[in-house]
Image (cartoon, rainbow, N blue to C red; front, side, top):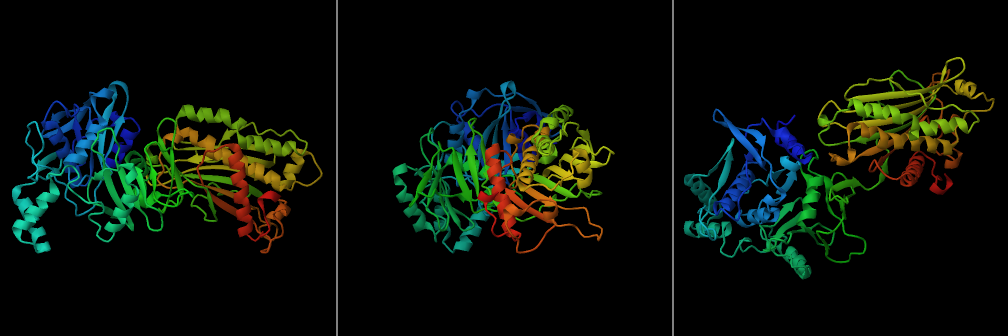
Length: 605
């Protein structure tokens, strides 16, 4: 349901502009039935600048172009989609008008298309701007020709209306600035007008680094190092994000993208093409706190870089670090879609879902893969009947089923993991749960596999997919296998079972919600690989893992026997099988070394 700015943007990004119909125009939403006629109507550029600046002054919002409204009382309600032809809007021209006519240029403005065919609309997303910043435009003339360079007007958003800040309020703001600066009134007014709308053009005569006096010289030196790139002029004052200094730059030519100069302490200066910078900001937009850069961090130079470097508009990937999400890579697909994924790393941190779906169970040994998928807006997801049926058809042929079947075949028995039933946990529109049980001749459960996925009940939670292999009872399994020798698992078998469980939880189960590749992250995805003994012995003490698993390939342990070991991998859920196997082996060695098997090495597994 669309009821706020975040959900409206999510609907537009999902190409569902029809979800906005029925909404009333409000503080954060404005609808236009037709495109701004920037070439044909001299008032159109003034109107566009006024609308965008008003949202920048009012906490952010979105303008949707191509949706007509109707009046209900004194309110405008989004009524129906008129749609826009792809050539009805020159997006580069829209960007230029915003940069040229608003001072300072609002940061992070995003222009995109939503929907297709006759229901294609354009949206202009104006994110919240830094506090204590006033966005001004030249006073409108409605006549052909250049804008007035000796005037200042302040558009503001008030409810569902946009109006001009009264002269008395502008005068009060100017007076407050004069009192704070201690400058004579005439000089203060002249200086403010020169800053707001300068005859020198869209950049307002600004210097690189202006606004950050402590970093200005450093930023100018970085700009000079990159002068070969023809970066253009400042689009506004430089600004700081934590200890990082940033400067928006623009070209006067419509076809040229702008740049963002980025200075991170301890790294070479980097200049990033505006389209790539916008993709960086978009990657972290759904992070808690809605500070994208604080989440994804900043571009990391390649190892070969020994000075300043550039990330052009034609780059297909860029590494990022320095944010709360840790090291990651932003990559562009063949369809032009940017997506952030974490660079692999290991830890022993246990997630909140590590022991979900274990209540009332006590298998002798459980091998588990838990994949945590912190997708943005998971409340909009649903498990359809058709996708549930597809999952039921695929489970008997899944990597999990294959690993369980192979486990018995290696012991000379044909115990297929082919019969999957619903349960042991709930199956609803927001959860799936399936099990496959191999029983002894007397009916006692011997070996069990389980696949579970649950959508969260709150909007800020994580989708969890889990795949288990459980040896319920070694003696019952021996009877099912009809063998007299032991059922201890080799460590190669443990790896095969964990690999099958991980692949099923990461690749097969998430498909029940649709296309996972189209969903954005609100935090880094993780996978937990776990080995646990859960069936107490007669003395009510849990046995050590090495009673059920041959841990000899890990070497001797300095910490004695353990009944549980686990490792968490921060990585993208989807990958090739060879890459997944290699990463799993590295993770298991990291786990083993942290649990006292200090001689464990990948080459020995």
